[in-house]
Length: 411
Image 1: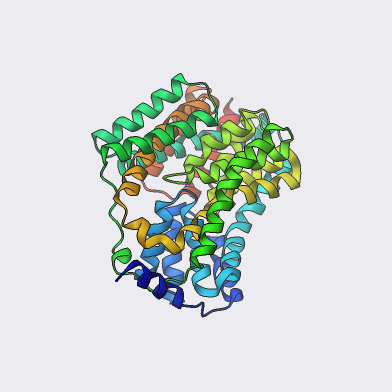
Image 2: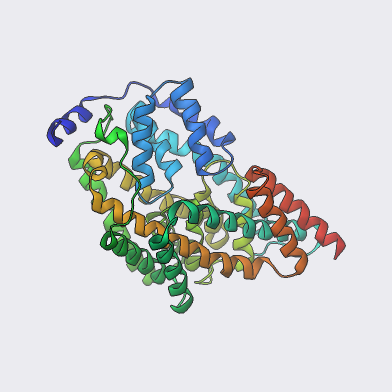
């Protein structure tokens, strides 16, 4: 089948559902989808493919392959794409809002409750300390898992180590992280690193519902324009502009998993004095206990830095680039999936991301969260819960909070 015939085939399909049924299904998912992006994808398949039968397994796999290839929050992008397949643009936004809102509201209320200065004494202070310690275990687990999947052999492991070393030597900040990702992508393309295989669905495409190609190009242009313009606005001053720029850049450059957003957000908030390191880590630990996307951590940061309006702006800004890229690339996915150079570059970028997250594990996560031998012991126990005993993230967070409270009583 030619590219032109393929495009005609995909554009011929039309949504068959109503946005209200999308809102119903994703509202339940937003309240019950604990466990992070991989777990979210399992919940989606159970609800959308097996129970509701909105898409086939082949179409689900093709959309998942696209979302994993692009930067951004893969599970949120997949939800947006599934909503679009069922009920067009209204379905896409219904899926995004209903899946995101419960977690965003919970973190907004938490930030409003303790503000820029989480308590650091008493029982509540012990719980906050426990959340910081939990963040150490969670990020260590993420680094281990990502290293195994994204840097499994010598060349990619070397890129990961090089990225970590570069961040140790370069001045701290978002520019260094972006430069490391770009260099990793260039090395991946130059070395022709082993990429993830193109999806079988891309070779024999399903009848995906896509925007027109012209719409895709417009969305990609908007994505690029905001990536350039928002830092210029931030340089002119203003907390809201800084938040928007930081969140948008983080959402645009997150490869390999939601935890990678941590160092990008830390550089633009804690690094710029908008949020204190203690508040940042406590919020990140609390975010692990929430259903839905980890990206709603931006809601928490926006509220701490600039109140309710800041929370709204940060939330919109961190999700916008992923959705713009998704819908911009969707009409061209067959061609993208078949391009080996793009997959080689993505393999290198993902390896560099492992190094970035490894650097963040040391600073600010470990240096701010582990302040005593008892803290380290609790972090190791939580890490073992995740790795050896395979306990859900919610249980680990609750155990960390309880452990912090116990340590405060023993102090």
